Length: 370
Image (cartoon, rainbow, N blue to C red; front, side, top):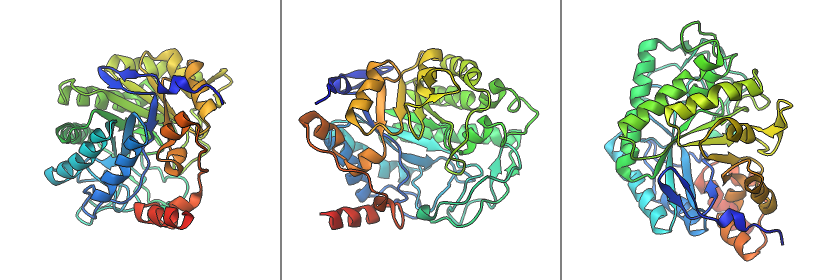
């Protein structure tokens, strides 16, 4: 048996104490009510991860305004008192099982597959660039994405204000931390990505300009929550609609942006890659390793780390501080407890996500598997 004890060492994110270095990665489950409220089924789902030994549970991406941010039908939100109260039940369930819980906030930008009927029509993005790829069938999508409208500077102010308002709702619901979703092709990633950001103002052009919106939102959320919660940022290269994308500036991009995020007060950086251990840009480092090189913040790494020895080596080698499990956690909601006891792990099966990647179909899959 490989030595995986490092995974079970206590750690911290700012003042937030975690019992181990194992997190649940945020995964879209499209299982909220039609009006975006978390359900009892969701509370039980997240509670099982906490009972299964994970120290840090990052919930699925929640929309953060009632204008343009929702990306999927039956996606949860955190924008009003009803949604706040529904999430409080989830928070209490996770806390009772011994884990800390983190809210992830997202603005879909151009990648909208469905949203409430009372939302504004159309989509917004840094520039009027048609997204690559097609919508995801298992999230109820079909066909290509429409061309978005270029967001105005006044609308950017409204977006920042909405992130703050949503974070305050999450704070009131009892969440222990906030993660800003700047990855996977959604609005903040659209600003960061050169081909979707053709702006000539202070939000376009250089790496420093393209990361500006992330920086400003991190600062605003920290101020809005009075510095009482750690505020982190998730970053990636690949996107849900462009799996092969790589940062055009290579390692220099990392050198340019991570110190800016440090100065903004980011409490952690969450890197998600298809294979988190892969070296990038010929640098001899993974993207998480570059985050460790250029940032002082703790780094969470997600991507292909379901093998316990691989997960342990990432931390032992200094390439991350916390490992986040996605597919491995879907297949093993008690992954930490199994690893600790030496029990065999179940393999991930895409049948868990079909035909719709929601909790109803997951429960049917596990019942049939026996």
